[in-house]
Structures are given as structure tokens and as C-alpha cells.
Amino acid sequence: MALDDERSIDSDSRRQEAEEVGCYGLFRGIAKNLHTHEEWAAETAYKVDGPFYCPTCFSDAVLRKCAQKVDHFAHKARLSPVLGPKEKVLHDACTSEICSLMQARFPEGKWAVERLIRENTEHKIKALVPDISGRVGETRVAIEVQVSALTIPRIVQRTTDYAKRGIALIWIVPLHEPLGDVPFRPRLYERYLHSMYFGRTYYWWAGQGLTVKPVHYGPASRHIEYRQWFDDGEEQSAGGFDLAYKIIKTPTYGQDLDLCRDFSAEGRGSFTPENERKEVPACRIWHDGLPPWW
Ligand SMILES: [Zn+2]
Image (cartoon, rainbow, N blue to C red; front, side):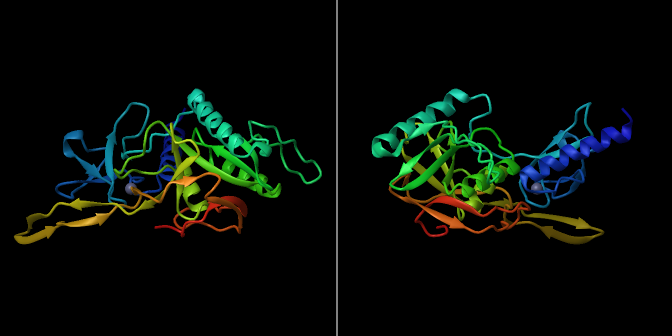
């Protein structure tokens, strides 16, 4: 492969990473030293020149040097402990726990796991297989339990297809363990669901039954150290204040919500979330009665 081809593949994968992270601040291969605020280029820097941070979003950056790729910096932050694509057993435990509790609560609701809703050729709606579905009173509800990093176009497609069928949809994100209170960096799909549900993402972990935790992504900041130096005999200084992270958030919990009692069906028009490029389509959501956020 020609060097130019390799470089363009490389730049594509870094662009994809920036999109996922939500910040292009490291795209040019420049990061700053956390203590001196000096700029370093990935090609000439070594690990000992760090620790580094991203000049745009202020989160930690790591230097990556490997034979197959151009030297570059990458964002580094705590992520939520979501289930991976190979953890079907945990996913199935979650869906069957929720489904059997819904069935117990609404015996007439025909609650089922992975029910096939056939394609509607007349209205051009694809077949759907909701993780959990049934009725709450007269309302048709689908609960999608998000495991692997489903791409945004697929979330959009599915959301639209449920809306066309008049089914109220809720996406929940199952975790290995409680999310905790330490700031973290929500993934692209977590941020997207956060927008879709008016500023919260619903997390679930084992033992919660029908309870979900609505989490708003609140602000988080880091302290930038004060530094003094002389430049051509002139005294200079920088830092000594807190800066708000752009992509790292503090999990801010609303009250625990019961998947039946605290939700109702609601339609919402399409809109484009702030700081994201992808539009949220018109949808019918299974929506809680809390204020926009807290
Ligand atoms: Zn950044």
C-alpha cells in the first residue's frame, strides 16, 4: 500500500475516534503538558514529556506510538461499565428479569422477549424484534436493552420504525456494576440517548428489577495548575483556575424510576441535539414525568 493511502486510512480512523469521543482537539497531533502547558507534537514527544491533556476539551491525553500508525495522541477517560458485544448471557439475564416482572405486573399485557413483529410491506416498515415488548393498559411498549455500541444510524432507523407502528420506546443501558459518582466520558450512543430522552440516560444493573436510574450528564471540571516563568526577561504566568471539561461529565442522578408506574407514552418531534451532528428523528418515547433535568 502506498504511504499516502496508509495516511488517509489513519486519518479516517482518527476522525472516527474524534467523532465517538466528541472532540477534535487532538486531531492535529498536538497536546499540552499538564504542568507546564507547553505544546508537544506526537511525532517528537516521548512519554516522559507528559502527562498530557487535550487543549480543546481539557481531558487527559495519551501518546500512542506504534509501527502501524502515525504517532498520535488519544483521549483517555473513565467510561461507563457497559456490556460488550460478547456478553449475551448478561444481556439475556437483564431482559428476562425485566420481562418476567412486567408480565407479573400486567398479566394481560402479553409481555415477551424477542417477539417478532412482522414487516409491514404496505407501509414499508421493516420487521422488528424488540428485546422486551408488551402492553401497559392499552399502550404498546418496547424496551430495548442496549449492549454493544449500536451505531447511530441503526438507533435512528429503529426509533423511526417503532414510531411508525405507534409503539412507545425506551432504550436502557445495562451496566456490569453501579455507575458511581466519579466523572466519566459518555460514549456517542449514550450521549445520543441522553438527548432523545430530554437530558437523561436510563441505566440498569443487576438486582434493580423494574427500577432504572435516570442519569443527567452534569458538568465536571479540572484544576489547571498555576505556573510562572520568564520569557525574554518578562515574567509570565498561567493556570491557577478550574476549567470545565467539554466531554467528561458528572453522573447526576434523578430519583429512581419504576418502568411502569413512572412512565407514559409521549410523541416528540425531530430535532438536532446541541453539539451533535445527527438529528433525533420524530419518535414516540416511553417517557418519565421528571422535569427536563435536575
Ligand atoms: Zn479533546
